[in-house]
Amino acid sequence: MKKLVVANWKMYGQPAMARQLAAAVVQQAAQTSAASVVMCPPAILVADIAKSLDNQMVAVGGQDCHADAEGAHTGDISAVMLKDAGCSHVIVGHSERRTNHGETSAQVNAKAARAIVSGLIPIICIGETLAEREKGEAEAVVGAQLRQSIPDSAAQGNFVLAYEPVWAIGSGKTPTTDDIRQMHRYIVSVASERTGVAPAAVAVLYGGSVKAANAKDIMATEAVAGVLVGGASLKADEFCSIIAAA
Image (cartoon, rainbow, N blue to C red):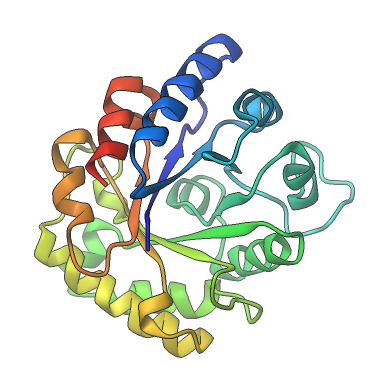
């Protein structure tokens, strides 16, 4: 399978900068046949980015969606709205949503289910805190998140998982490749059991301080299907180097 490289812009970006970065990414993607690229800008930029790309080389995703198809949910955005704006993917359950907004795995499950029925591929995030890892609870925490966050409708090709150790996000710290390999193997096993999808077909991205300097080693690690990139995805040279590392 091609490596999947996903850019999570978080709450950064303006139209001019977005179009310029998108153009650089498209140029790099055209030279890197081993990678599929998804850019996830803030919701207000989604339609503009999708329109400026206007091709199949780079896809667009949302950073979150509501569990309901529509309704009185001020400030929220639905999966159908994202789909209509040109999205193919949506991130759900990012640790910043779980921590800052108190999202539970049950809510993440509902969002992922809504994404699937709306024609989007949810990128379902899971990961442990430093305290949980130091207590030896990393697998137990991630396993519980997986079982509770993956919806019953998950099937081969309609969902992606992203392992993001919370303690590595934005910290500059990353687990060793052995740590990543061990956790990704575990995630594949649990997800396969939960969904019935063959282990080889379960896609698990790694996220957490991914940068050009470590992307090649991370993506060469067994059971790593690609990367979810945060801050480095806002810098054209850095993100293009990550795509090239595929």
